[in-house]
Amino acid sequence: MNKINNLVKKGMNGLKSQKHRGENKQSSQERQLNVQEKLQKCSLCQDRGIIIENDGAKPCPCMKQKSFLNRFKNAHFTREMLKSSFEKFNFDYYDRNSMDRVKNISYYDSAMIAYNAARNFVTDFLKDAHTDGLLLTGQVGSGKTYLACCIANALMDKGVSVLMVVVPDLLDEIKATYDQGRSGSDYSEQQLLDSARQVDVLILDDLGAHNYTDWTRNKIFSIINYRLNNQLPTIITSNLSLKELKEYLGERTTSRIIQMCRVYRLIVDRDIRIVKRHEKEILNLIQR
Ligand SMILES: Nc1ncnc2c1ncn2[C@@H]1O[C@H](COP(=O)(O)OP(=O)(O)OP(=O)(O)O)[C@@H](O)[C@H]1O
Ligand SMILES: [Mg+2]
Ligand SMILES: [Zn+2]
Image (tube, rainbow, N blue to C red):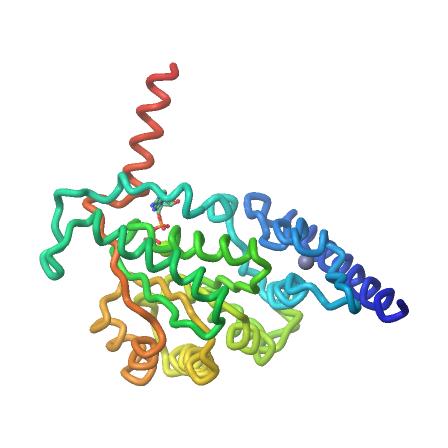
């Protein structure tokens, strides 16, 4: 019983300090809804931080998720991202009559294949945590991040630790640790890198055409290489083709990405953001 009490205490303390931090974040980024907020309503432990079983108690997986997330200032999902779900995935944005000439399938079929792969990833991961990851490619506004968020939400609902980081933000945060006094970063570079390396599922959003230096390339390599060696799945979204990825990131990293991720492409006639904007304007006109 003592053991259980200690675990409860530990769990609650973790939550308290985390709630405190969450408040600070909230005030500075009002529009952002932190993943932690969602996780505070943990369905597995009801936020106690432990799961009580017949033969005792064990820490709830959400605690691990929270400790990883606490380290990152930018690892939060926007309100819109949290709304993404497989159930709400809209196929209307992908034309049935436009053809991907390379694969000779329609944009719609291409989206369907990527969608099924994402769903399968979730079911496969829940059976075996060492399943292959996904590389979701496609042009701007084709739904790559949306699909990655569907995966993240589905897994987090099952208590899996998921870290979603936008690659340029991750690199900025790591850089900020070098100047702790000024940036107020609470964590070391090693701690941030370890989170990205070790989390159950890592989502690297927007691995794009940034100004890569040897330093940034090395950081990305070290994360990818660790995850490959430990067979930890990574979901990557990118606007770049494999050829371009190789140019920007180098062959060693790209070769590892190909080894650990299945590649899918989302293609649209028009940026979904623009389509949505038009839909909204039309709706406003009708409602007037
Ligand atoms: N299948 C979909 N169903 C519903 N909404 C979608 C879908 N795909 C994308 N969206 C919405 O369209 C917008 C753009 O999608 P998203 O951010 O996923 O694009 P992206 O491919 O990641 O673009 P970028 O390359 O600029 O990062 C978002 O507001 C997203 O919510
Ligand atoms: Mg995106
Ligand atoms: Zn929990």
